[in-house]
Amino acid sequence: MNYAIVISNLIAKDEWLEAMEALFILSQKSFFLILFSAFGIYAAVILYTRLFGKRSFSKMSSFDFAMTVAVGSMIATTILSESVSFLEGAVALLVVYALQLAAAFLRRYKWFSKITDNQPTMVMDGQTLLRDNMKAVRVTEGDIRSKLREANVVRLSEIKAVIFESTGDMVVLHKNNDDAIDDWLLKDVQR
Image (cartoon, rainbow, N blue to C red; front, side):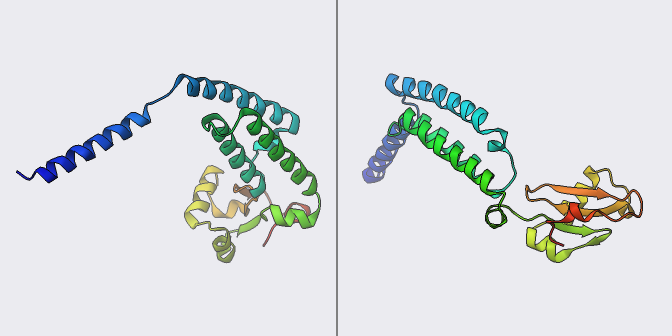
């Protein structure tokens, strides 16, 4: 019998047990810090969302997506990290919400909107797939077929256009007659 292997297996087993125990250790202090931070940061998010508006969690642009990720990360860090106090987390959230509000205001200006917003892109014009545009926005034929079925399209002749919106949604414009789509509706759409 090789005692070195037996001893190394016992050491590895002890390390594994210590690691497993560490996963399930929760001191009373940590429990109450997590409990109070979770309630406090949850209340802060609700308050800030009410103050700064519903757009805080909308899927309108890449900036809004970044806002959502940042808020989630700050909530988790504030709740679970002993090195971040509730007040620090609440102030950080306030700053992110203020930045999001400033971005919503600045989005009115074309130069800022170009930086923060994705441009809607036409991926299908009538029955024609716009393959270069599909490639640019990383949409497959399967994605378009799925969206057409979802939009109750039963014949390709029913399609006026399919647009990949800045939110990541695809919109199907149906052909009810031979009228052209109003230019205003396609003003910011890349064709």
